[in-house]
Image 1 (cartoon, rainbow, N blue to C red):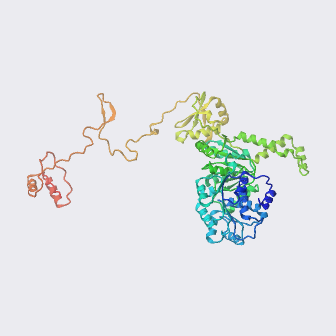
Image 2 (image 1 turned 90 degrees about the horizontal axis):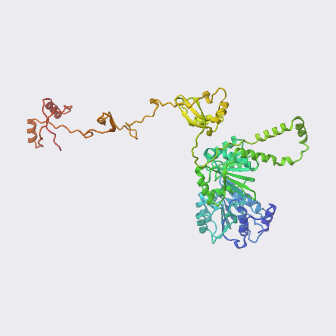
Length: 638
């Protein structure tokens, strides 16, 4: 290791190196292409910073005057690129390195000026670096090393074409290092195409669960997801915490909910400008905010001090994303917690993701309101404030408080002040993924409530109203029978007195609806004929009438005169009626024969057909003939 870099590590208090840092410093790997897989947060930035130092400095201890860049470091997001630049800046400071960055969202003119002044190491995002190459504002002819940080994430974000363009423009003699948390086939293909006999390096922490991160899977019902997030934040009370959502809409909704509950919260999503994202992260670093709600892409590369808690409000799409999310905590030897909020419908997905990531999580329920309160009491009694001596500036106020107020009053005031600084926990419903058999309700009392079908009453509205007004739970309420003008409710006999006391002597509930206790089980009324649902047998499923007009048949009847219920058509019903034969006179017969027409057959009996409308000479002749009792000659075909 170069002495300048060793001195920089000593100044930062680095006594030991992480497994990935030790692995890349193996003398046998010096100058070689590397494909390194290590868990997020394992010190990869310092790892590749130390790995490329021999290639960049060669036999020198310091860099020469900055001209064309000699190293490229490419990261998927702006935040990660700027973080890498900060880390490499202090690592190479004693070696005289000049660093520049080219990332999206920044002024490109300023970046061109910095590149023109000269830089040894350039840290970039793929799209912005390609723009500079195509505009000719960066010279890659002197590049000695190229590092792809979070290579798997860059491919997932669709930067493959940009990366291939950048690598193709770089000198073939370069040293190429690929660092990735996972190594899918796409990464192997990229390494095979653009690396020369790359050495595979796997950090020890990749083969087992990260020892500094505790994984917890919390089972909740669907409607308690946001409440579980609130209780988890209150339970751990981390200096910094990240809550992950999959979409911008989720991020905005959670940010609003947490802000309304008194949390100091900021949001990170793709719709924010670079300035807004920088201000949000700075608020987390200087303590003005404690909770960051973010999407996966926006939170990529975030490195916050004292980040002890990661909450997955929505499950990630893959195990790689889970590792990246969780890797925001458990850094630099600090302990961290990664909590997954799991509902009944995505339990199998959570199990599959944890299994593919080779992680073992502690399954259980989300922190309840009682657990949050108990944890807060523990923090009160274990606080360092109790062991510190009273200062001279505090002594006058302490003396006055103890003189004017009793111990109980001071303790109560302290408790209220403490509670005002923290949001109250949420009551969570009990999660049960096993169907329970229906049990007998037991001894009960019936009550009548004003309002029935005529008032739009429904059981799904009445149940929560009774629980709220009467201090009941859903287990205290049995059957709910909605009638036309009232509603009958069955309540456990053991809970009836509590219900009456809660609604008061006036016996009214929401909207002033009167409640009456019944002496016996009510007799349910039969809905009136006009209220019963009627089926329209005259319409098909498509909505068109099946029969136009009245039916021309009736159900068959037996000897007793009763219908057998099966309507049958009479014999011959449904067949088209035969057309009556035309009548021909002797003159028509002779005329048709002379003209070569087909002779008409035998003249049938019966009345002549009705006279048609005469619209032509022929029709007029036929009409006149029919009026005299004759039959017109047949029409010739053709």
